[in-house]
Picture 1 (cartoon, rainbow, N blue to C red):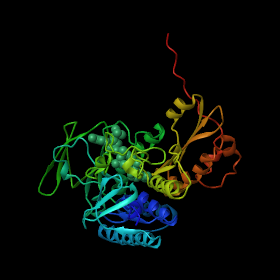
Picture 2 (cartoon, rainbow, N blue to C red; picture 1 turned 180 degrees about the horizontal axis):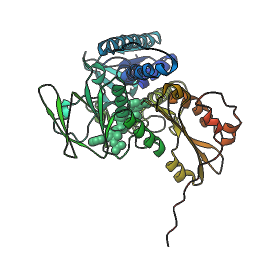
Picture 3 (spheres, helix red, strand yellow; picture 1 turned 90 degrees about the horizontal axis):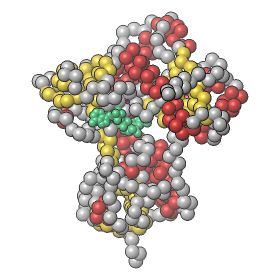
Picture 4 (tube, helix red, strand yellow; picture 1 turned 135 degrees about the vertical axis):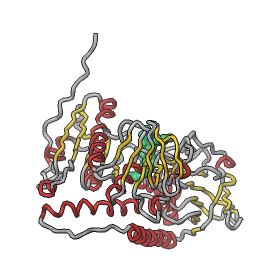
Length: 461
Ligand code: NDP
């Protein structure tokens, strides 16, 4: 009899855990995966996928409006929240089914229970009381939304976990935060016709993004009618019979139907038994790992948001895959977390790869910046006021494009493709010799010829 029941026990059937389990099983490992909630994790069940469906829903209002300039008469339009939620739920059920089926097809045993670690090789299945001995344990339990520090009445707010299941569309909603989730849902609800107030402690949205993109999104959101309360925090929430009074740091009180708290996420490491195995989490609760996703305990690995490296689905998937290649495939693989294309599904959408202008200047010293902002062709007839922003940041020494920043329709689609070029190390000359596709918005990426003049700070003394 072998010393272990399984070769691999994965805790958490989200993007990272499922990928790791399937690839390890493909290599011939005996694999079990435990999930206390639904299979699919944050991305499929309460994140990227349902969010994107809601983003699509929110953009029809613009289309109806734009149609008139092209000769269409669109009759009276009406949005039904319940239909959207029902159809979205059906699609999520379908996807969960596919995830479960794929695990089964790969020969992975799925356990519907919370599982906690007891020591370097033992996992306790809480539902059955069973203890499984595993050669390797992979922790892929993800993260959860938080508000830290909490505010009085904070429990009246909802998070991105609940927003997908509201029974009715809030007529007035406040969104707290200025990150990915806050700007995406502010855009969704504004598009669906809710009155949106976005409260953010910073002076601009999306800290860490290029400053021009941040400015442009702020302007676009204000133009779309979103009330932006910047440099503002929420001090308390008070429940009324039918709505919620939100007191702001400015002293003003805003009355809304829902408050969406989108102030960041924390790893799900509480009560997981990590300390019993000798693993100490960091100050935000994340599991420290090396480039191979290995913890200090050689039999325990961790991937995805629970490690708080780059908290994006495709990265969790890559980390999970690399773990399986390393441990079961004989191909030690380290994931490069440096050059990651990403999209924010705000409306207008944002797509980014590489450095912003300020960060590039710090890293590369001498840079060239190419920038264009224009009215998209469709807006000429629709009369829309939207703008497209495109920006290239180029390392002057090597001519390499080290940053691409796009705001406008389909920016997510564009950045995926521009991302290939940047990942390959394309230079500005490579962009220049690429023939434009006309008439598109994306052609501007290959037709910008003159760098913007960068004002140097005047030396004093
Ligand atoms: P983010 O870290 O992106 O943003 C959190 C926001 O909340 C920031 O604006 C932050 O302000 C603010 N904040 C933090 N603490 C407080 C507080 N106590 N009071 C007031 N404001 C506060 O987190 P999200 O929750 O939006 O998203 C989590 C992660 O999920 C993202 O970072 C991203 O990695 C991922 N994600 C990716 C998506 C995509 O790829 N499209 C979509 C959604 C999520 P400040 O900037 O000042 O720190």
